[in-house]
Length: 353
Image (tube, rainbow, N blue to C red):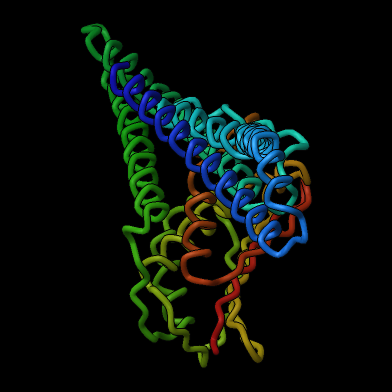
């Protein structure tokens, strides 16, 4: 508080000295102008001397009026706006990101002050959006972590019952194991997404055969498609070579293929192909699953968005958000076509130029 008072005193003294110098300067200029005018005038010396007191009193009055005009103009057109900017920076520094500067018509359009105020308001809005996103993210993470932890705790309590038979114990242990796997996947996705958004993961480009890469990726899901008796139709062009980050592209393909197999009913079909045109190498992953509505499609790449939660198979809402972030980092493109009850098609385009 004392520092603020000292600043105000210094500001007042500086302004006072400025206005005194302005007054003296205006008086000096007017006096010199009058002297130069009278020096060449045909008026008698006696007349000039008789008019001198009134002339200099008029100079004093005019100088005072002009100085007051400068003071008022400076206050309304400059000082007042500077105070608004200072108050805004103080509020933003304190964490009040909803604070806005409301300007009036006294600010000249396209002036530097208007430009500064507009940018300061934009910064405040961006900070506010960032804070809301952070709070939303933490809330969603807490919820997503709480659910599996509650499941693990409940089934762990059930395992303490000495009357359980071996089959029941085996079932409960499997549920706990599956839940831990989901929890581990959630934490890994959160960490990867955080690193990508903070640019802690940068692409490491290398050239490799796309067909070989997709073949190796598909083998990791062999048990899933065999258990569900899903027909896997693969059509890969073996002459396509791409230059991108193999590890990041693997995360993208793993997420999309995993979703395709997860949401496709037993005895369904999944089609996977890769092909090339003049500028792009494309990966197409199509399924005959439950499909995605138009409304869900608009938000499908948002963090923690899960669309139709009535489906028996659910994720954590981070997989496709991670996919989209990696696609952006790699400078690639992703498109989705889907119809409820028919299935979904994801197409990834990688620039080959």
